[in-house]
Image: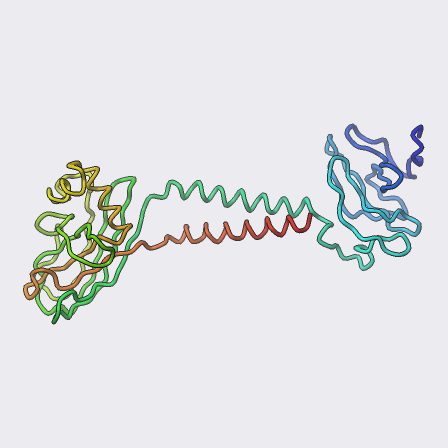
Length: 296
C-alpha cells in the first residue's frame, strides 16, 4: 500500500465500506475475513457499516503484541505477554476487557426493563394501609386488624376489619381524621356520618368489609368537608388521603361499654410488591452500571 502499511494478509477479502484494513504500524493490523487465516484466532467480531464482520487478534508466534482497536471504537484493554501473545489469551480465558459491548448490551436491557416497569407503575394507583387494632381505653380488651385500600383512579376506599374479644358489644365504627400528631390524639369523624355502612352491631367479635365511594358527599361528614376539605368533596378526599399518608387518620370501633371507642388503629402505608421489585431492579441497574464503568 502507498502509505507504507504491510500488504493484506493471506486469505483476506476486500474490505466493505466503513471498515479499515490497517491501523498505524504502532498498533495492530486488522483485516476483513470470515475465514480466520493460520496464526490468527477469532476472539470477537465487530460489525462494520454494512453489517459485515471484522476478524480479531493475532495469537501466533511473531504476531503484534498490542491490543486491537476497532474502527470508531475505544481500545480494548490488554496486557502484552512474552512471545508476542496477549496475556489475556495465555490461558485462553477472557478477562474483563474482552467483551465490553456485550456487557453494555446487558446493562442497556436491564435499564430499559427498569424504565418500562417504572412507566407501568406510574399508572398503578391503589394504595394500601394496614394496622393492628388495640384497646384505646383502660379496661378495654378487644383486638383485631384493619386494612384500607384507596384507589385514586376510581376514588374508592375499600375497608376490611377483623375484631375479637371486645368487652362490650359493637355500636358504631368510623374513620377519624386528622389528628394534630401522627399516631396519637383524637379528632372528629371523617368517614362516614352515623356509622360505616353495614358495620355489624351488637357483637363482640366479627368481620367487616365495605367499599366507600369517595366521590359522594354522603361518604364524609359535613364537619370534615368544611373544616378539612375547603367545603368541597374533592378537598375532603385529598385531605383524607393526606391524613392516611401522614398517619393522622385512625379506624375506631365503638362499643356499648366504651361509647367513645374501645379499639382503634392508625393505619400505615404498606409497600406494594411491584414497588419493592422496582427498587431492587433500580439497585441492580446501578450496580451493573458502576461495574461497567470500571471495566472500560
